[in-house]
Figure 1: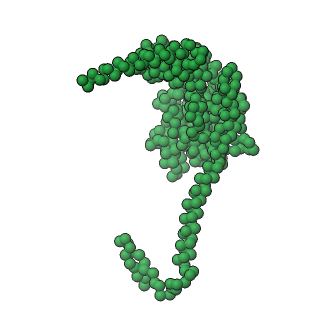
Figure 2 (figure 1 turned 120 degrees about the horizontal axis):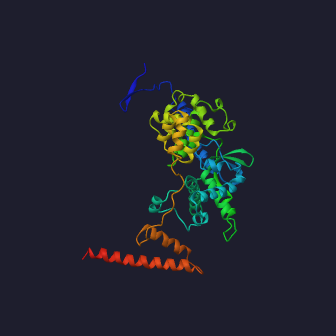
Figure 3 (figure 1 turned 45 degrees about the vertical axis):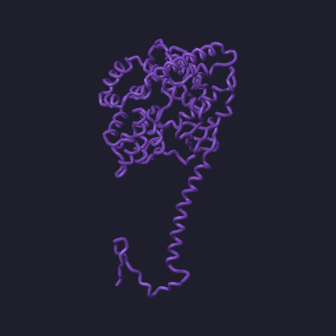
Length: 406
């Protein structure tokens, strides 16, 4: 009968050594220990090698060798602009020029890309933002422009991910805006009209190569963004649900002339497969299945509202409400109450007086200082005036605060 001894409060079997050679160099325990050591070694160093292999797969790839993933739930380019694109990486430069022209037409004023990209203009102050609402085309372009300015100033901190599709050709998995920002920097800083030639710097982008498109990895990155709109989230829900049920059971994106029809295929499945519901909730970043029900509703929207809802970033609650209405009523409501409102930018009013000590005064002073130099009399005068005003204001504040100590 096997005897037991206590270890940490638990009864453990006591080994009978009567038939064991305690001095045998090839004890079974050694083989077990060796096996355990090899397993641990493989696990630890295998993970390190895997990470090293991943690091080695980071490389600079030409932006012209990368094609976007058109099924990606997140849309950086408005539908009206996307329709003018030949959908090639070589055509992105022309796409961006058309986008700028459309933004200028929408705002009714010059949209000076160079001022933002060169760092002489920055995003609007809070007071300006509250007094001026850009239209959807300008707003979407500004996201690319400000990202491009950030990359030019600070570098690309987050590599894109790509999948090789053939020799020297890749498909974008994550990072469409970063890819577009590189294209914008490439076409703008081309050495013409007094601009520096930085094309060699922006023609390639740092990319992490992965074996295949992973819709769950896409979802992780998309959900990390605060501006993922309701239509994008409905697309995200659809691709994840189709993936759970087996992508081979659904038609490919290219099979549809209307992109909404591709995602609407998910409506054929009522829910995630058994045991996968939590995975779907977690990937979508929601806690209840009622949120998923709203995304299903949104997938059934009339196409006109689907497109407009994406371009105008309409709220989830409104889109779910429209989706629950009969199509004709929903479209009529949308045209009257959404499109009927003026979605073009408000006329920019005159700005308030720029007094020293305000954010507006400080930003204008910094811009003038940056522009100051030989032959720049206008900006030299503005910078000196702003500096004197700020110095006087600081003196006043120093006297005021010192008086509290008397």
